[in-house]
Amino acid sequence: MRKRAQAPSEQDLVQIIEALRRASPDVLAAALKSVKGTRGGEKKKAKKKPCRFRGTDHWITREELEAVCAVSPPMYAKLWRVCAFHALRISEALALRAEDIQNGFLTVRRLKGSRTTVQKLLVNLDEQIASGTYRLFPLHRSSAFLRFRAAAAKVGLRPDLRHPHVLRHSTAHWLLDSGVPLHVASQYLGHTSLASTSAYLNCGDTMASAAAAKVIRPATGHLAGEVLNPPSRTDLAAFAAASWENVRFPPFCFQ
Image (cartoon, rainbow, N blue to C red):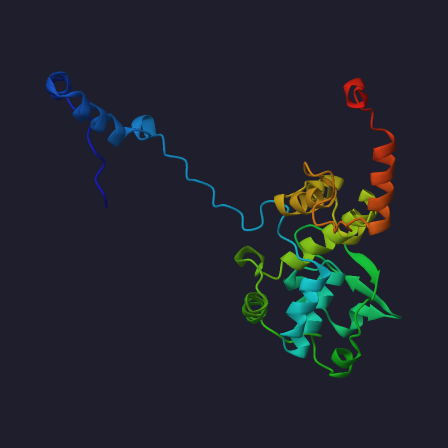
């Protein structure tokens, strides 16, 4: 067993104090830094690991989703669409079974305390149902991660978007950016609180830059990217005639 360290005696403390008095400021600062956070049994607080999906820029467009599906095997492409169109986590999608689909409706049993929802099925899963497997997608979770990362890299998505959870984030953005009310989007996402859904209302840099490029007018007075048609010869002649009629010559020109 590890022996417990004994407390220093009074004589030891006096010697330590005298040594610190004679020490230079640099040595004293180093000594204090070495014992910082350990006095009185205090432990240094560990830094929280940064969240992979903190922020609101972790989503893709419908075009980017179709590009990812185009370079993925058919079963994985259908899995990506199920996750995106029904706001599923990858574990929730891989847990789907044939009995979860009844009369064209999908029952989603969500994880992490989210509510169970019943949604109109938006992806054709007849082939998966007819296969007779216990799960509609008999794949391992890590296999889905690796496949999505490879497909996302192939189509040029940013490294922080190469994770299947961006599909669920994308669903939230598609709904809210299309004007769907907050409580309706919250129900579709399976959120138990509107506060969870309202996090997607925060605008990221990518979204803000795209919106600004559409409406901000530079000093030239026209929209960025707008093509200006040059005036025709008829317009130039009319402008010259009107300008000539408004010319006022000074009196000395007629003397």
